[in-house]
Image (cartoon, rainbow over all chains, first blue to last red; front, side, top):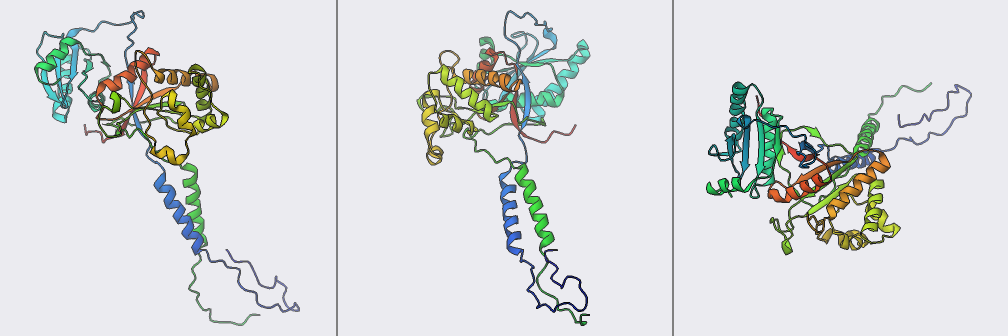
Amino acid sequence: MAELDTSGGGKKGGGKVRSKKASTRVDLTAMVDLAFLLITFFILTTTLQKPKAMDLVMPDKDEKTNQQLPVAASRTLTLLLGSNNKLEWYLGETGKTAPTVDNYGKNGLRKLLFEKSKEVLQATGKDMFVIIKPSDKANYNNVVTAMDELNIVGNQSRAIVDITPQEIELLKRDGLY
Amino acid sequence: MPRVKIARKSTAIDMTAMCDVAFLLLTFFILTAKPKIDDPSKADTPASTTEITIPEDNTLIVSIGKTANGTDVGPNGAANKVFLSIAGTDIRQEVLKTMGDQYKVSFTPAEINKFANTEVFGVPMSQLKQFLDMDARDLKNFDQKGIPVDTMVNNELSNWILNSRKADRGLHGKDMQVIIKGDRDKQYPAINTVISTLEKQKVFKFQLITALKAAPKK
């Protein structure tokens, strides 16, 4: 392949006798070495795994566009994200029911969302609406985890809303603010 | 007719095929390579189970990162360290020109060119000229302050985003997809300022960069 045909060019007999030429075979070892070195470099520097992203849609806060639909309190679950990776939840209106403290784990938030959405679906025949209210003491990871748990459960009706002073008081009372 | 000779086996292996393969692979990797951009925001993204990959074009990534010493509040009370990464060199050029007009800073063609090749930046407008004049060595040690985001007085981030969106509309006729990359330990208010900045511009749909985590078995 890498060698050229160095024989006499096919003339048989009567041709000039040529002196044997040195082979044109090139030693490719060094070239292969270099090629693999470069491959290694490119493999290590490329980002094959592209970052993943989560879609987030915020509610329009503009008062003028009056397109807000009322949602029944009975099928609204509110999550108050507090400090120390803990959250509080309550079903219904603020202050009517005492909030329960829970964590973000598999047996915490996810279990809660599964159970409550089932309950709400049975009671009202509609999907549960989840409002996430991160307090100033919650970190970004908590918000993403909460959204992710909703994705896992398959809940599509949710919103991130600002927390009210009344709810901060609830968090403070339970030592999560 | 050549004489029949017992061929002496050479110890040299034919490298041709190996060389072919090696260069084929090399070509592939060079063509697909997109060098890792050193992210000055040092944001450690939270994990989620979503598997949507972010698009490459028409994006604007707002990174909210750790401060230099890793704490939440940086020197002189600056809680946020916001970096911006605008996709597309033509858009970056356009944005810098409009931003220069707006903040009365004139940039030389060399500076505009440098900015067009800067993937990520996080300096206030007052320092931008200095930042662009620096050579690569100084740049490495330069502590970028972050783009000021203040919902009340000085919101440079808002102007950057607005101008990039305008530039993308004007140059490509497309809508910019805003992506937020936040550090997992960042307190929520830091993220919320960026989100409310976007909401003021009527951007309600954006994406959050997350690291992939295995989805739980159903």
